[in-house]
Amino acid sequence: MFGYGPSLPPATSYANLQRHEGWRRGSAESDDAWNRYQDALQSELYLWYGAENDLTAWHALCRAIGVEPLPKTCEQCEEAARRTHVNIVDLIEWGRNGSEEKVHTFRNVAELRNYTKETRKIFRNTFDQEGSNIVLRHLLRKIFRESL
Image 1 (cartoon, rainbow, N blue to C red):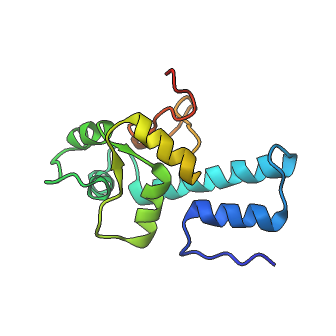
Image 2: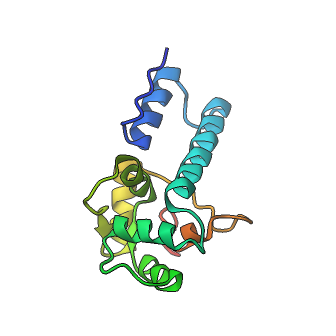
């Protein structure tokens, strides 16, 4: 039986489950599990950082990425988020742990890309999907298509 550890980072839990189940990359079982994992990450991100017009949720995001002082409007929060390069799985971990320290941010997309690939903390890019989280749109970066 698989032992889920809620205090573990999401990427670690998924990797442990993948090993436990013996899923081979590209198999139907693996693809289905990956899609469900990504859906769960997106739901949890929404839980911690809410909706576009929720200033409290925007302030949580700004605290996570180290924006000080906290902006007074949602629009100002959007601007701060748009200029920040952060791993979204790390944001979810920050929300889970309630850390006082800010999430590690990166100077540019190349640094974020390298970190994401090394740690395998991958969040599916849902930017083009209808109904995708507007808050998320300000944070998503193209990690696997370097030319874009």
